[in-house]
Each structure stands twice: as structure tokens, then as C-alpha cells.
Image (tube, rainbow over all chains, first blue to last red; front, side, top):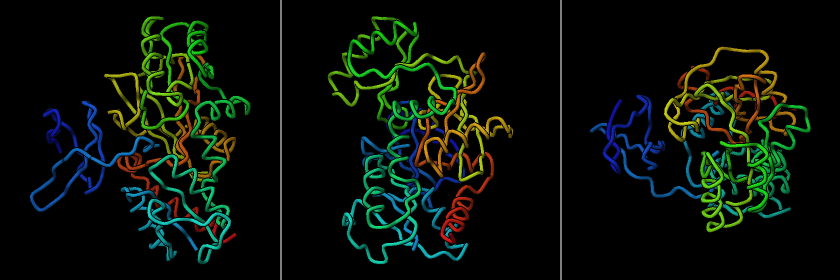
Length: 55
Length: 280
């Protein structure tokens, strides 16, 4: 599904099977946390990424 | 006893591994190493068995693996393998020594070394810190001036950013390959990025299924074994002249995109692998 990045406002594609807590990176550089609720899916900037996180 | 080791957050991958362990009837204990101390050389309650290292923090993954090994756990992957894979210099060195093709690379531990490495390779050259993740600070310098600007920034950040690998720019076909290895099992995907030369999915590349290829699978297993990794994400370039070249190895691989585009239940395969190891 497509929604908009809350940081830059540009479109971002979210997998249909995304779950709450999943992190996605947008081309603008923002790391976003997926929030799934009864009202649908929304994104918020993720605050907790450590500088050594990642594979 | 099976420990599912994580740091601060249980990502989708860790949730799926936990479910798969339960489906196999395996009891496990989640261990958040950001909240639970591990007595080095001590006696963790029921301190025997297998620990599956899944920390999102690279440093926590390495350090907690070492501590858990001191307690008596067989940690997958071992701390020495994690350390080798996390260091791009060490990783490429081990792969080269094992006779595995890698991009031409120079370990460059200072300003002059970076500049000389790039001059030998020619421009464009890729410059990346030896320690890093999710494609952070991987840069391409198209000429000497750009490289000097990048080095200036790295020096300002600190030696961890400065010490790195200067590498030839491999003219890969807008994609690389992520081969996920679990024991002797391999599943591969393409990571396609037509807008940028960096092909990490964390940096916007699109995951697509890749056809099975015995040569590729053998190479991924060889690379994993050279590093002592039992579970790994091996990143491979397709060089137009040399064929497959191994660029990186990831000791705590993410796999949600692999599952999404291939349908392969990676968590289940990991759980089954742990089951066979626990039986030994």
C-alpha cells in the first residue's frame, strides 16, 4: 500500500503484510516506524535507532 | 535451553523465529541484552544450550555472544565469526585468503592510505568504513577532489569513520544478490536499485526473487564457511568480466524481504537448523 512519509511528504510504499514496530527507510533518509491500528496504517519517525544498528 | 538473544526490540524476524521454535515444540527464552546482564564466566541459570544471536545492535551482538560463550552457550553465530564478518577489512581478507573472488579492495587506515588506494584503483572509487551497517557512510568518489572532501568529513567524525576499505566500483547491473545461508541451505534474492548504485534494501533497493543457481549457492556456502558463519547474509556482485564477487557477509541477517518475495519460510528453516544442532 502507498502512504506518505511524515517527514518529507513524498509517497512511500509499505508492504501489505507490514506489522506494527516494523522499520522502513525512506529515500529522504528518514527511518520510519509502522503503526497498524483499526484506522489503518500510519508512519512516524523512529526515535530509537542506535548508530550501530543494522546488518 | 534455547536463548533468542535480542537488543531492545524484537523485530519481525525475531518474532517469526520465536513462532517457528514454538511450532517445532522447542522451548526458548527471549533475552534482551540491553536489560539483562550476563556474568562473564559465571553461571547463567541453566547456562547450557544454544543461543541464537539476533541483536539489532552490532556491538551488542558481538559482545553478548562472547559473554554467552563464556557461560557455556553454543552461540550461533560464534563471536569470532561475528567479529570477522562485521569488520569489512577482516571479512574481505578472510574471503580472499580462502580463494573467493572479491572486489579489488585496499585496507586504508589513514588519509594518505585512502588517497593512494583510490589512485591505484582509479576513479570512481568506493570508500566505506570498515565497521558499519545498513549502507551507512558508503561513498563513491568520482575524482580526487570528491575523495578529499569525503575524507575531511570522515576525519571530523573520527577514526571509526576514517578507517575503511577503498574499493573498485564494480559495474554491477543495477542490482546485487543477497544469498541467505542457513547451514547448507541457500535462498537468493536480487536487490534492485535503478536510481542509485547502493543496493541495500535499507537504502531503497527493491527485493526481487532470483533464480536458483548452483554456482552462486556453492559460493555463498564457501564464503559462510570461510568465516565460520552458520547463518549468514552473503552479498554478491555480478561483475561483467569476472562473474560473481563476494562483497560482504552479514552475521545477523535480516530476512523479511527474502520471505516476502520468495515465500521461503526462513524462520522455520532457522528453527529446524537449531533443532538439529540441539540434538547433537
